[in-house]
Length: 342
Figure (tube, rainbow, N blue to C red):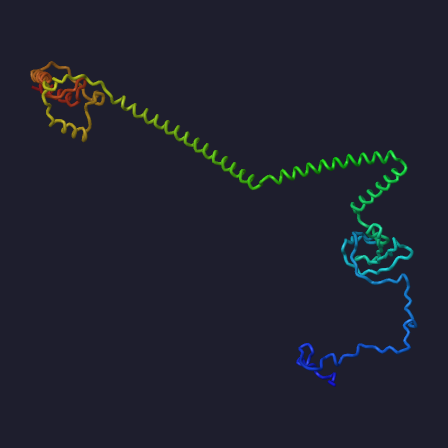
């Protein structure tokens, strides 16, 4: 037989299937010896009190508030409670149990019991149960139902009235239900994706119309500004054209043959003189500077005037009608001085 103090060998363990002896060989025997004259009825029974308390682990079945310190104990908080069976209180053969817990703040004792009639718990001592609208509503419905049953037992006309009220109420409920069904069918037939797509298309159409209107307004404004600019330019062009236009005398075609060619050598000289010195043919500029002496015309002046007259008749020299050159005045003044000295 293997020694119990020997070291355990995993190779000889029955779990691996190797070795004939395992660890169970060293364990104690599980069988017990019963003598032939054994009588279990002679064994004395343990007498326990009926109101014996057990320690159990539970959670608070409802919200409550401690009367001692005012601490709130919420539903679902865990406690190590003491449980006992309530004496002389049974509902349809079901025992009623009482639980003892302690406040988490002041360690005051709080007790509550089971209520199998209402499938709930009732507060007994140490705390107050918080307000619960559902429970009060259920209690009120039960009270009204009980009163109605009592009235129907004693008054048959009340039974008829209650039946008519119930039938009317059922008809209203059915009508409301039918309306809800029709509404659900309408909503079921509606394609929300198509609605969203249509709405997007409508928004795009509105944006496109707005853009077109903006473009038309901008185009109209540009055309108006361009027309105003053209009008201003045409007015500015017409003014110098009017100032430049002069009445042209009608010339016969045969006049060209009668006119003599004018010398062109003096024109560049006069142009160069006007470019360097300036024009001196303006009478008002030198009218105050030159004074003409009133003398009798001498023979030289008479000859010059005769020559000028013949030149004017022949047309050999260019003449300016209506204007007298300042240089000509100066020349006439110097000739008069020479003739006076002679």
